Image 1: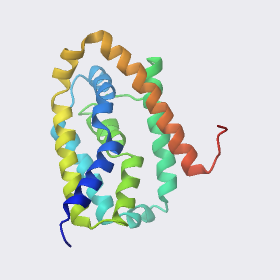
Image 2 (image 1 turned 45 degrees about the vertical axis):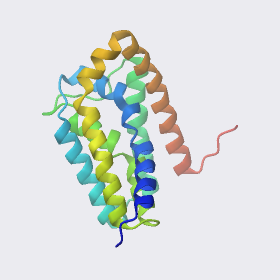
Image 3 (image 1 turned 90 degrees about the horizontal axis):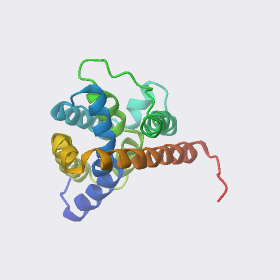
Length: 192
């Protein structure tokens, strides 16, 4: 187990792109408007716990339930699709009446620690040393916490008009990501 800064940077960039906290801001703000409050530490720790479980146990964890990574990704694609539909249509598919509102579901899982990012963790394990992935993951969790902590400030800076525009735009992006996840894991080929 040797620390390699280039490997850490590579893992960090891959995880940063997949977790996409800056792109999740409109989704987080939408969930916050429905639930009233988001707990940054709780969401960060729960998502980190999920990532660590898959980093350490990976395929064995899914194997306990007889689930392969592809099936897990397809299930995650449905959740992401419904979140996107909520944002675009203004409908409500998820009830956010549990303690903590949307902090655990859907923010910690599947928004932060979703099918795509968990699959990425499993893929990175095959190529990089665990210590390098762990450091990159912890750096990403600092960003996750910071974005969740600053949602009120971001909301004030953007204002209601830009938030509405971003919400619709990123809702469509989420739907597209969900379809791509579904297609990539079912073997369906879409016409170009």
